[in-house]
Image 1 (cartoon, helix red, strand yellow):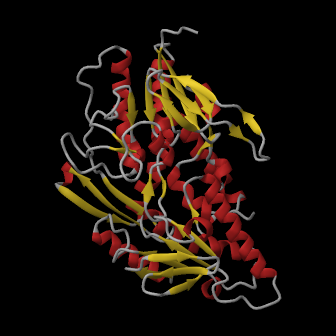
Image 2: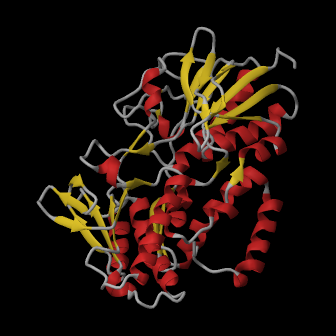
Image 3: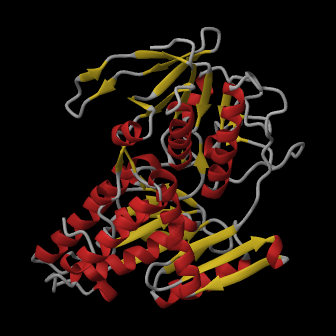
Length: 440
């Protein structure tokens, strides 16, 4: 191996990290200009905005997950399985914790990897704010495993209700979702659709309109508090049509095996609780010697370089980045910002490898709007751009088409347009021979 090649280590294979590794591999890696290594704790990648569909059973993750090893092989970078837990800035090495198998045995021992440039793209996790019982009795949709865990619990609860001799009790099939951001509202609509499709497959004891209840709790006074009010009102109308129980202005104070209690004293009985409120960056970032904020985000300059070390970059949800050079306000933790930053870092890394480290590109956040998908019921959006002279509200088929295109654009960044086109054709051919909901 040519040890003079610049070593770029990317930790975190989410949408931004994997897109960046792929682009760098296809350019610098393919031309032997740099050695690109991607590190992730999971063996496969799934686009995070799909997790609510996996949780509801509307999507079979086996058909949409991507093997990191295969992507690395096709696109000229290395993949290493493991969780980063330490950093030595003096020797420029990261340490990966031992990889433990499902049976508790050590599969891969602790390893160290050297770098010339380190890029942290480890995303975020749900922040339960230390609420009593939240960690023990609720499920956070941070990854594919958690989404599948929720689906199995929901599926088992429905099967149990179908086969039990007694009547279905109040709350037995109720799902409470804490947090009415995009994940919370999209999950509530997806659950409404998926549970009705599931019970249509011979589960005749269950009346989904009477027995399956979905409740959405939000501490703010409206749904989607971070998005324009018009979007909130439109989504609220749709969810009310679906008989989703909306509890606005209610702050959860306790989660138990039987349900959720709010600060007003209200108790909502439930079989399952999903925590979808708040985010924080992974906790290990506090212990690796870089400056972080109160939610563990790495403090970076507009170049996305750590304020502590020019050879360390961070982007996406795990980075506290000024919204523009010199600003105090931070970039919001959204998929579009991670995508924009990945594109900028691609250009930055080409300059760094070429030795042109002066005047690196600086990031300014561009808000292109938001889309919220309620499955087959509705899609709403708010588009931003200079061509429109401000913002434009969209809904219906146009919004739905744009929402679906977001995933295809992510796939095109990973595979190219030909592969994506073939995937769409295959999906169209097989859709009539498959159920629309996961039955196991």
